[in-house]
Length: 84
Image 1 (spheres, one colour):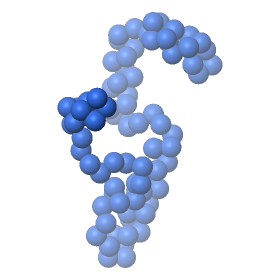
Image 2: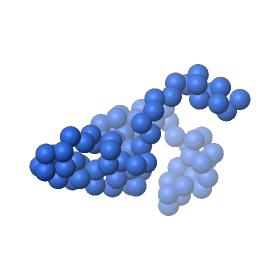
Image 3: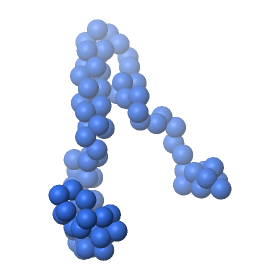
Image 4: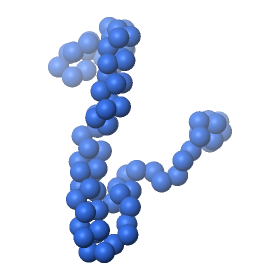
């Protein structure tokens, strides 16, 4: 894990984290978005690209500038069927 915080492995970190801490991290993620730096950078770039597009009369959507975000909605049941 990051600098040994919570443990040296994912299993140790899962064993050491409290339920309250999980809820705190979930609330943080809900408020501020993904913790993945790549996704955050992609989102920031997409906002800039969208603004440029709209200033030039374009009608693009934010997701048009985010190639790593899936456009299709897949239900849990569909995903489980595909993995079976």
